[in-house]
Image (spheres, rainbow, N blue to C red):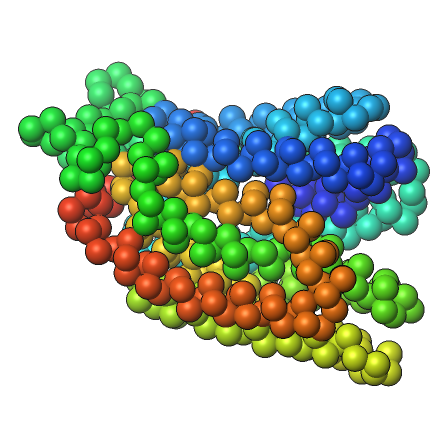
Length: 427
């Protein structure tokens, strides 16, 4: 349900805030950049909250907060209220992503998480497609009432998501002793906190000289893996921002193709993400998938670069479609590999904060990606595309060594993954 709301929001929000509210594009861009910059640092503390209090309740609460924030957009009429609402939205979204990942870690056995996330991603993309179509209706109508209807749909989608999350089985906070100790007497599974200390008082991070808290902030090896993944996530603004602007600058008569390529990407992930993820079964295969993603994204950028040449309109359209097909293939491989890596390198008692830290790559890509890519590609043309492709290839090739580096002393600090808590119906 949240994906349908997201699809409607992403396709209609920019024009609503500029045409209806009256914000300038510069102020809109500034507000979103500040919001996602703040959201990028919110994932770790909110993920930590999911570790301490339970991922199901945390995820549900953040979904409901998001619904309230989106509903507040209905009454935003100036830049400052927009900035406050946008910051709250980005913060809740970052925390929701971390808590949702931790919830998957608690409900799904270790060897099945990537496949489960692939199914979830396919479902989310189907919802995005439906939401984008509804948002397109608002864009076509163009009235204030139509845009407000799209925001109302988004808020209701997150409200429904929060209620659905509360119906999922309760899980223990992810700690080392969860499988053995169980919840304290009288405590619910989402509020019990099991002692993770070893017999001599050392925490799961003791072997690495850390004293608990936001341990991920001191984990330089995991930070390196996250950085490499963030470079690959720069693909995110391509279809939503860069390609439409690229088409508008070079072939305005193909303006419709930007939306068509977005739909192509969404449908491709919906149909083939699960199949692509089957090849990822552990860290070696995950690193290999990311390396392949880097090579495929390089090929995609090379095809996009060819569209800068003076070719007929039909040839340019064919090149753009070909580049988009390669991009969705690279995206699916990179997503499957990164899911496995993010979980397998995280301590079992800190899944939430580690997933929150890994998820900062998305916020960084949303914050820095538009400025970086528009400058590199729209001003740099074909050579800019080649530079971006080489950057993707380098990141893909770097993931394997980064993963091996992070895994080197993994056995000394990584607690065994807790068994999934008994799946008792909520209610």
